[in-house]
Image (tube, rainbow, N blue to C red; front, top):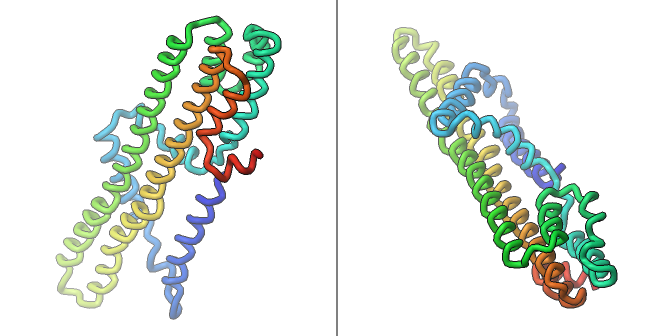
Length: 254
C-alpha cells in the first residue's frame, strides 16, 4: 500500500478533526447521512451522465491504483535486462524463450516474445509504441473521470445548500428553527468541498504521477528489448537504460 497516500489522508482529515474539536466543537454537527448521500450520489450520477457505465464502474479500480504501492522500479528492470542481455550474447536470443514463460508483466512478456520470434526491431518498436499509446489513453480517461468527480462534488454540494435554504425560508415563521436549518443546509457544501479537495483532486494528481511513472517504465522496457533484438553489447545496453534513471538512482547502482 502507498504509504504517502495514507499519511497524507490522515494528516488532511486529522487537521479537519482538530479544527472542529477546538474549543469543544461537536462532531455530530458535521454528520448528516442525507446530505452526504445527496452529494455523493449526485456526483456519481453526473459522472454517469458524462461517461458510459463501463468507464464509470472502473472508479473502484482507480481508487485501488491510488492506494497501491508499485514495486517495479527502473533499477529492477535494468538488472533484469542485464541478465537477459548477457544470456542472449552468450547463448543466443532464442535462449530467452524459457525466460518468457516466467514473466508476469504482459507488456514485457509480449515484447520479449516478439524479439525471440526474430521480428525486425522496427516492427517490435511499432507494436510496443502502439501499446504504450493505448495505455496512456486509458490512463487519461481515468484521470479525466477523477477530475470530473472533483468538479461536480462542490457544485452538487451548493445545490444541496440551496435546497436546504429554500426549505428553511419557507419556515421563517419559526425563528428558533432558522439557526439549525441553516447549519444543516451548509453541511452539503462542506461535504462537496471535502470530497473534491481531500479525495478527488488528490486522486487526480496521484493517478497522473503514477501514469507518468508507468509509461516511463514501459519505454525503458521497450528500449531494453530493442537493444537485445539488435544484439547490442550488454555494457552499451546498460549505459542506454541508465538514462531512464535519476542521478541519485545511478549513484545507488555504482
